[in-house]
Amino acid sequence: MGANLLCNYGESVAMLLFGIGFGNLLLQSNLIKKIIGLNIMDTAIYLFLAEKGYISGRVAPIITDGVQDVNKYINPIPSGLVLTGIVVSVSVTALMLSLSIRLYRRYHTLNLDKVAMILKKEDK
Amino acid sequence: MEFVQNFPAFSIMLCLFAGIVSSVLKKNAAKWLNTILIIVVGAMSVAVLYYTASMNTVYVYQMGRFSAPWGNELRIGCLEAGTALFFCIIMLLSLLGGRTHLEEDVESSRHNLYYVLINLLLSSLLALVYTNDLFTAYVFVEINTIAACGLIMVRQNGRTIEAAIRYMIMSLLGSGMLLLGICMLYDLTGHLLMSNIHEQVLSIVAEGTYKVPLLVAIAIISVGLAIKSALFPFHAWLPDAYGYSTVSSAAILSSLVSKGYIFLLIKIIYRVLGFEVFHDSGIINVFFIFGLCGMIFGSFSAIRENDIKRMISFSSVAQIGYIYMGFGLGTKEAMIASIYHIFAHAVCKSLLFIASSGLTDVSNRSRHFVDLTGAAYRNKIAGVGFTVGALSMVGIPLFPGFISKLLFAQASILNHGKMLPALIVLAISTILNAIYFLKTVIRIYIPVENGRNLTITFRQQRLFGVTLLLFIVFSLALGSCSQPIVDLIRQGLESEIISSIPNTIYQLAQSLMI
Image 1 (cartoon, rainbow over the protein chains, first blue to last red):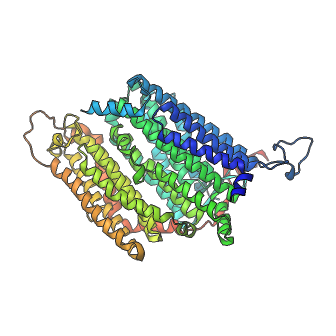
Image 2 (image 1 turned 180 degrees about the horizontal axis):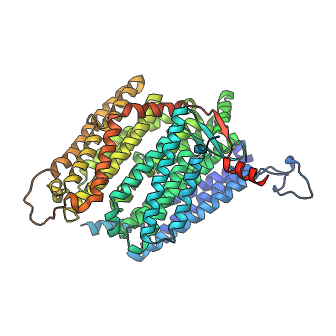
Image 3 (image 1 turned 135 degrees about the vertical axis):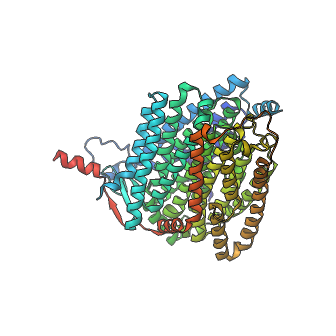
């Protein structure tokens, strides 16, 4: 068990980072820190994918010097998934940041707990 | 290959293009484009449904020219086509019913943006229903989330901003877990297409290797989708998001968006993991317990609520608990009951939201129960609509809610270990439903001296009235003709892929080039 963790250290780091990002996104009360957590979480998944797609001793799947042997190149699909994932996470981050600007303009705070308290007062 | 087989791909593409075009259109043009689009997509779904149901066939549609392990595919059977048709009907009716409120809640210059979001939402829902590729499913899940966030945000006040942020945070947690689960599953099986993953999962299970990673992947995917569809402990964002957005958005969010995720989960259970593998994984017990908790606690929260829209939102938590309880029972019958309940709940919940907006209109826009007293006399059709929805939620015969409760009860009898808790909680939940829904119905039918509140007749709100009538007819049809629908669901769940066909557009282009 321990040996496996050590030799797959890339994946272990990815899972650790995923946990850190997930915890930040869930538990931080500051919105900017939440968004940073979101980015750490997404990046951890890309690291995981990149680790899984890489085969040591092989090169990126771009044909060089006319070598067409499959065994010379790494698996290109995880890289494609990472690219798609990056596009998704960029757009989601942009949306979250624009929402935070809206919230700040209205309540002059980025702290979600404070916003909740202000809303409770408004109700009364 | 027949032309009708292209329709699912067409309808997804049409919605995406309509979304792009709407961004430069004027308000009315965007509105009409959207209405026509939904009708066209609905008609196409009818054709596909007729084709698949009459031929009793399921086919795989290759997008582009790449064959199975590499290309992207759609998988179309009668369950998928029926769900697409159903989503179109509910979306159209919700939009029609909320149109007057939309005029008030949204600035006139931003109406076309609202329809951009609606079109994108429809395209992502259709893609979730039809796709046979897990990563495509993930991408459209994200599109769905962003569009849903926009639908909450479109009414500009502090409440909706806060609700949208909370919704986004929970959704992003869910989609992060879903993505990680999909990546792990890809890592284990080496495939992204559902049918290929299924074969590999079966061989992994047969060999007995990778038990823990497979279990972790299943658990992460399940929890991710459960967070996104607001299963009980993750429902905190739901009442604000549904309660404060404009009424069409609330109806669409509660009846379609969360159901899209649940439908994806059903696809993953059946097409990716296989029912037996999922059944043996133990996740179903987790679903069962949280489903039961949701049924009770959702109802308790709804009883404590003084705001009619938030009450209806909390009732969604209870109903989603029913659906997950069906998954948790772990029999085919229960799965059929869950899918039927998805339909029944979608109709009744959107009906309730639309009708409650009619009731608040005649009560000085107040959503508190005290002010709603006698509202059904001031707006008769909304009162009738609300009563129909409430009776269906409680589970009175003739209405769809009764059929789904009956199916759940029948299914739970087949599972000896879980029969007793399921039946007891079903009974308790029915009583709780009755308490808060009938309380509201009685409240709106108490006659009061009508001094300051205005009265709205049918003539003053023709569109709203006709929409509610259509909703009522639709829900009665769903409740009284349940057997064909149940048969269709069964047929859709049991069918296996018969034929795999390439894209005709590509063939056409190729023949033209030659």
